[in-house]
Image 1: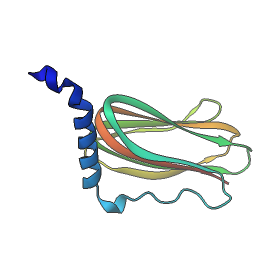
Image 2 (image 1 turned 90 degrees about the vertical axis):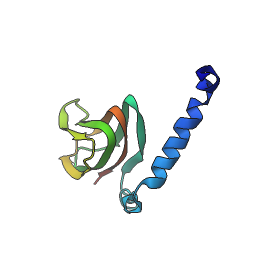
Image 3 (image 1 turned 180 degrees about the vertical axis):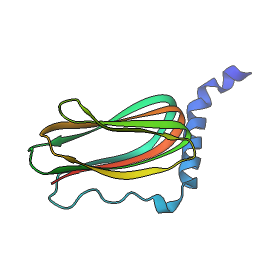
Length: 136
């Protein structure tokens, strides 16, 4: 009997994600990232699997100035981890958010030319994320 429904699980998953997105509070709208003419990179979305990693890179052209990262994580099931690495590969910021908690913070770093990397991973469930890199 279950073999007949095995092909339908992707539709069920999609329907569940649509329902979850509809239940999200409207006050969690993503703010614009950066100012006009200011270097920026952003991303937002939903992670929903047992274990998933996602990278958010940001390229900085000069050592002068500041790099800023605004990060928002809302794990609805399971937990989310993040880490920020500078172009030299050094860990600059990391943390974990548990199910039922909301995390939103902005950190500033001294600019180092090269590719900065935000790594996010989800363990055992689903959640929302939003990030905004800016440099000046």
